[in-house]
Image 1 (cartoon, rainbow, N blue to C red):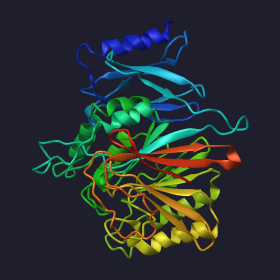
Image 2 (image 1 turned 30 degrees about the horizontal axis):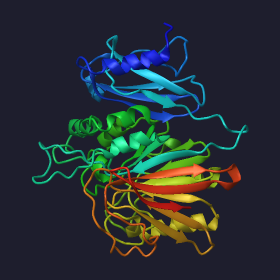
Image 3 (image 1 turned 120 degrees about the horizontal axis):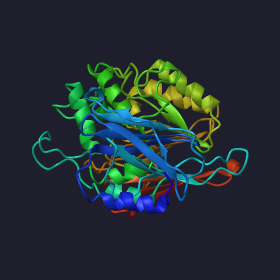
Image 4 (image 1 turned 30 degrees about the vertical axis):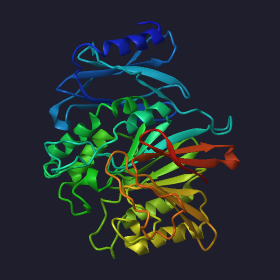
Amino acid sequence: MKYNFCLSLMFFAIIHTFGQSSIKCGPMVGQVQLRDAIIWVQTTKASQVKIRYLVDGSDADFNDTDAISTDESNQFIATFYLKNLMPGKKYGYSVWVDNKLQQCKYELSFITQSHWQYRTEPPTFNFVAGSCAFVNDTNYDRPGKGYGSSYQIFGKIDSMRPDFMLWLGDNTYLREGDFESRAGIYNRQSHTRSLAELRPLMARTPNYAIWDDHDYGSNDANRTFRLKNHSLEAFEDFWPTEYYHTNNLEGITHSFAYNDCEFFMLDNRWYKTADTSGTMLGRTQIDWLKDALLSSYGSYKFIAIGGQFLSDFKSFENVANYAKERQEIIDFIDKHKIKNVIFLTGDRHHSEVTKVVTPGGTVIYDITSSALTSTTYDHSKEPNTLRVPGSIFGVNNFAVLTISGERKNRKLNLRFVGADGKELYKYEF
């Protein structure tokens, strides 16, 4: 079927305002590489689903995926792995359910990564990082004022068209009535994913994620959580990537590369002991992280973990509570002079930048970005002695990180942006 792709996108947009969609949640763009991409969809009932896609502006034939049958066993989810794509191209796509084109009032698209290696300097790119996304549900929320607000923040992120979105945990909030059953865990994931303000962002921005306690189980849940396997299954279903179970690791630990940077996605729940003299990350995961950092050629090495890592404030679920484990990783980075390590953290319902200079002179940073829509707090008097002065505030926000410059002289710039789209703070590394 040949036809002008721009006109087809207009048609997809117009049709959205009519009829009833068979899509419950999504579509969502998952990982995107040079020649591959993931598209995720959840339907309202058992259906046959396919994706139709094409390079933007092309008059070639559409590409159709094989149809996937959704069923109740995994809450009617279909995950498509598009392959044989061309690097550095914008693709438009549409979703078909039972051979019917589905509604969409915004452009559905994604851009594959550029094939810059051994050809040019690495591209300038940016990504958004954030945590703590609470979506109110009066049937199950605690009495009183809703804990979630500022949903317009997702529209502000979408308007910036970042290269990808990095979700730093508490991406949804399991409540009483949710974390007691597999069905409850899946239902809460669907409830958050169906938020109208969120859908355009997810439909045209690649999404990568880790979890924290609230999308794993109950508050401060650890390795003893009885339904951890169901939580893992749901997380993998709702946040698909090919990189889970690297080196046969358990939990959601994985890594990915974007242009010249590497991202190490840690699990602070699966191995966590109740006794702080024990472990948060587990020996297997720590050893993997050490090897991965030593092996990395990334200009920047971003380590994503749900709770604050560098802050020396021993409270809440900061890694400072597991002081021996925290120090072991800092000492390893120092010993091997691993440069440009940046921790990306959430959880705390405030944002700040923490900086450590090791005895050997290696500089390590921790960028805490919280909260997207959850209630925030003024923690400015909190005694984190390693805080970059003036960097802490407690309002709904997200972090925008931009990497630019030549391969041997890359630069990282941070901006915290509020729910109204206004810049709150900036910092150059």
